[in-house]
Amino acid sequence: MALVKGCIACMKYLLFAFNFLILLCGCALVAVGLYLCFEPTVEEYADASGDLEEYYIAVYVIIGIGGIMMLIGFLGCCGACMENAPLLGLFFVFLLLICVAEVGGGIWCYLNREELKKIVTEGMKDSMTNVYNTDNNVMAAVDTMQQKLQCCGAEMPSDWLENTELQPPLPDSCCITAGCSSSATGNMQDFYKTQKNTDSPLIYISGCSDELFSKLEENSVLVAGLVIGIGAVQLLGMIFSLCLCCAIRRSDDNKSYAI
Image 1 (cartoon, rainbow, N blue to C red):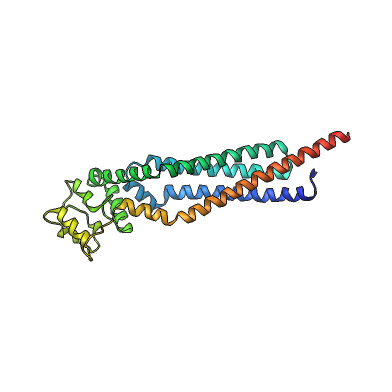
Image 2: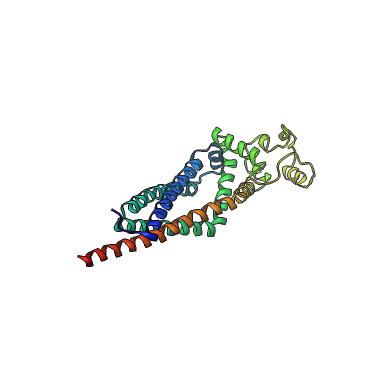
């Protein structure tokens, strides 16, 4: 039996709708996390960048937050339909904790963005100089990354000079024109300098780390929009749940006084 009427009843159904949106947002976060884990191209970039334990931890956190949001959205829907004040209060607390975790995670990523780029760059260098010749998976991942991002080396093509076992001294995946690695003879530093200063280089000049983060920055507006949208839904959900919870308590108090 309904305990709330009028505008509060309307807010009840709005709360149900917003909780359903929170449920969908949780599903979206889980989907994004699973995409980052299993999408072949992203996996290749991760392999090419070396040991990215922090990256996978962040992905698992995204999946975990998405799962919790799904559960909270479901509980919020139930609380709104049943007009259960304790359940709505619990929903408010959990949603507040999620918002705090998201804001904290966003601030941490922003403050440590240069450190993250440094970790990615060092991981790429290690893969190219120490693992490329011995691990076929890493070799394929690095070659795919260099071709798709049109880059060569972690920071610059001369990074490949540190791989003393590589013959010819740079992989074909660095080539704009197939087979250009056979032209890399003599003093490699002079070769790289010449390629950098010519209008028609034979190899890609940009480092893969810069190109990778440029790709991420190109999608920053989309990511920011998604984050703002999710945050707005969560804020409205907290406001509506608090209002509905107070209305239910007032209704219970009025019934007690009437008795």
